[in-house]
Every structure is written in C-alpha cells, then in structure tokens.
Figure 1 (cartoon, rainbow, N blue to C red):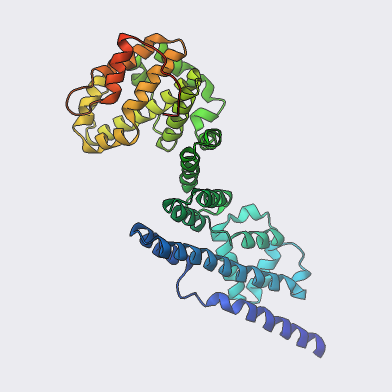
Figure 2: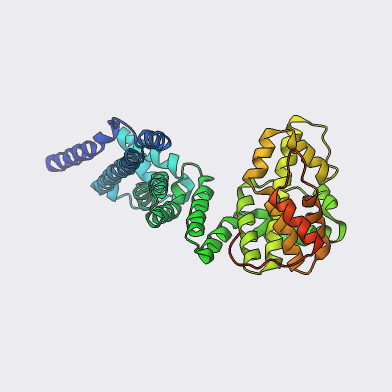
Length: 377
C-alpha cells in the first residue's frame, strides 16, 4: 500500500512538472512576433522581416511541441492509461485531480479545433495538438519575403506549404489570398497550365459556378445575354462574390488567348457580372433610390465616385468587356459581341474613358476579326 502511494505521488509530480511550463507565457507570443515581421516587411526591411517570420513559426512550433509532450505525459500516467481512449473520462480525471495546466492545454485545443471533430477520442486530441505546430500564416509571409526579393521558386514552395496547412488558418478566408499568390507566381513564370489548375481550385469555392444547381442559372444567364441584350442581363442578374472575380477574369483571358472562346465567354461574363454588381451595390450604399437603367448611365455614376474609378481600374473593367465581346465573336455569337464593342467605342470622353480598349473596339466594329492568340493578355 505504501509502495502504491509512493508511485502515485511520483507520477503526480512528473505530470505536474511537465505541465508547469505551460503556465509561463513566452516573453513575446508567436502572433506578436508575426505582427512585428509584417511591420518590418511594410517598411521594406525584408531581411529582418524574414527573421521575424521564421522566429514566429519556430515559437509556435516550440509551444505546441511542449503541449504535445505534456499531454503524452498525462496519457502515460497509469491511472489515465486505464481510462482507455475516452476523452471525456480523461477530462473528468483532469477536473477531479485539479490539473489546471492540463485543463489549459485542452482549452487551447478546443479553441483552435472544434471539440466535436475529435469524436471523443483522447488519441485524436493528441494528434490535433501535434498538428497545431503548423503556422500557415508564417509560411505565407516567409513566401512573401522571398517573392519581393525575386526568389519565385522558394516563394512558391512556401505558399504551397501554407495552403497545405490551411485548416489551421486563423481566418479561413485567407486561403484564397494564398491561392491567388500561387496563381501569380505561375503566371509570372508563364506556367499557364499550372496557373489554370490553381484558378480552378479557387473556383471550387464559387457556389454559383461549381454547384450542379448553378447550371440552370448559368444557362439562363447566357440565354438572356444572347437573346435580350446587355441591359436586360444587368437588370435581371446580380452576383457580388468579389473573391472569385479575379479568378474568372484571369481564366477568361487565358482561355481567349488559347482559342477556347466559349469557355472564355463564360468566365468573362461572370467576371463582368460580379464587377457591375459590386459597382451597383456601392452606388446604392450612398444613393438608396438609385435604379439601374443602362450601362451608359452607370458610367456617369462611376465617374463621379473616385472609389469606383479606382475599382474599375483594379479589375481591368474595360479590358474585361473588350475580351468578353471578342470571346462572344469567336464563339460564333456576333450580336452580343457588337453590343460590348459599341459600348466601349463610345467611352472616349471625360470620366471613365475606355482608352486603348475603346480604340480597339472601334476597329472591331469597322472590321471584326479574331486577334491572333500569341500570348496571354
């Protein structure tokens, strides 16, 4: 009996000693180090920023490695081992024995990972603690630093590593930012099939594009555009998913350049719809009684709002319209093509002028032709 009590006391001491470190916060938490790195990055101190991002990654890894080892120590205590894989029984043991440090580790785990996903398994809890050593934000910012220094190959590997760890992003929406960076690298390196693959990965998150239920909507949209014209199309439809606008636009331009005109028209029409939906929403935000009548009047509203003139430049609004018309022409649909080109040809005054794209559109109206797909526009 004395021997058993002595053994229990020793196990209790080892267990508590192993958890003691979790109650001592680091001098600077890993997220603070990451934020310092971002500040250095924005100030152009890329070498110092890289060191900070690597330190943040290493700090997080060390923290969760310690937690992982401590949880292993807990599960190795004979009294806990006899509880089997039941996470609820392990929690009861922690609570009854007042193991505050162990409870803190589980609270951290449940904050990062939905408890229901652990399926009541202590083994799965341990696995998830180990996986929390990943720090995708740090991997991304390490990639950013290599990108601005011109090391595109290393940057690409970092972005891909960050994407592989996306389940542990603090903000799940940041996943798209990583994907767009991967796309940009492949585009710069003229690796267009890889660029296409990653753009399609982004569009898996586009509900209207990817779901089977969206096929009917897509078909109806194209019939409206072809049969009833541009004004009717923008009167009937709205789609403001700005996070996928760039993916549709880049894919449409790529498919046009590679001679796949029908597919180009599909993606460019989606990009065009998203662009105009966002523009109309912004106008309504400040002018609640605004009613869309036609695209020409919409341009007058854009010209009066600097935020919208900046937006149409950012999303290559007139370039999108020009190639959308050209894609329709290449797909054997000259009527909508001429409508888009006509709109551009008239945008040569003050305000939101179409510039080069208006000039090219006027040329197409005089003598329509398929421009040679020499390179990705």
